[in-house]
Image (cartoon, rainbow, N blue to C red; front, side, top):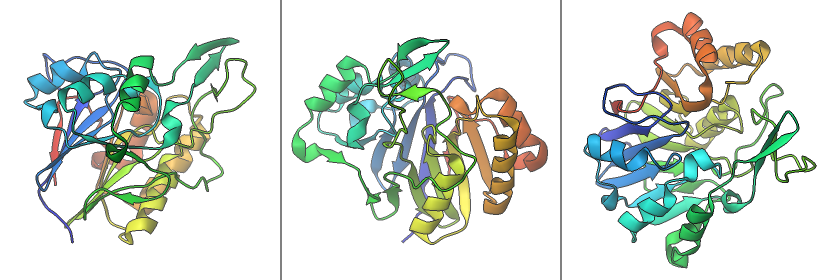
Length: 279
């Protein structure tokens, strides 16, 4: 089964496509498909509700909340969403709730799920909280990757990430997952930050769906701190995977986005809050 009437709206991003929208270092997508409403990530929180209102999105009608991983810029709005839609179902890896840190210049910064968001998740009824530890179908045409195999030798998590403030336990961000939609014109992929690597993630999804045609890839590629070699390898892989559209946003970075645009041309359009895509 495939579907044509899928809509993806970028609710929260670092950049905006129109005046009147809020921006932040965060990401959230609103997905409507076959009468179901899926919220993919929540950003840091402050931009979510005002942007949803400005874009005509009613968060109280959220059926499913998907969390791509447990960083603050994707989980900060959880509490407000659950208050608005108390009967929703939540899908995420159990690792989203663990403490996490970024260490730069010898200083540790907490970057994990905020306490209020963690408490809100703990309050979700057990039959509405679904731990995703393997590929999982949300509907007949919408799936989650579960943990993504790390197969490339040039991709990494994209930062100095640790599970402790002392920097003794590297964080591989094993909870990282992506969402995919099967449409009649190919597979649409929504990435959070692709900490498992965008190439690893897309190869995994092609293997799961059996469909090599990628209609669109929307989300964070986490290339903002990547070296030129990794960006060049990513470009080669995108040529091989040949998605119709690449819509990098959030943590991709301006320079890597430009480097993607140079060889791939019209395939690449920077994603921004307020953009709506119909498939």
